Image 1 (cartoon, rainbow, N blue to C red):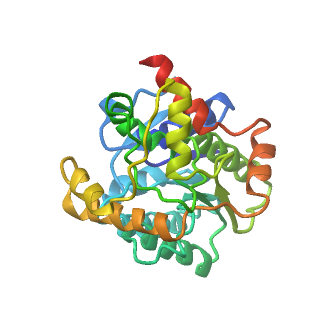
Image 2 (cartoon, rainbow, N blue to C red):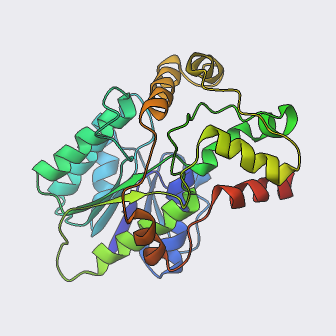
Length: 289
């Protein structure tokens, strides 16, 4: 019985592979570049991608459970539909799909809307899947740590509604646990959705206050300039992606990412430990500086 992990060299995918291996699973990884496949011993590697039909069929052959993770790319929706259709053709009845929280609400945000459409496909075709819906990744803020430490501001336009930020290490471990729950079941399990959230729902001011506490000096939250956010992102990503991120940030301001009742308790029980907090992340960053 083999579990296939797509997106295996990414931040979340690598965590999933490591946790599966620790738990004794037979893991196969689909990777574009085998030179980046620095996995634990025993992981088999298939070179290919989600638009290469032949390589994907090879990767799916003999697989019992699929972890489907798509990067935010222009053809993300097409990639996901192809992968799920080929998995269905291969007779795979155990699937875990990484979506995003509030995919149904952020209807004008391209990568949210695409993930929600994939969720609808899973539901309408009756695929036996768990849909994981993570909130904002705490680890996204690694990209702005130098701005915080050097300029004394927290620049992310996350608003005042609050985001239930989650650590990607927790995302990877929860995904591995859910993959193994499906893998070990005697029969394919029905559709399930799990919101992946952190222990705290934080505003921009809250995050700035955490950094102030951790660094021992004032860190300001300058506000929610989504246009400026887009322009900054255009320096290191395609314009369409920067605009996608701006649209997401604008929904942060109007909607937030607030967990449902029982989400934190469910995840804490699943992990058997508390969820990692933003404060812990900030202390780790400060200690490593």
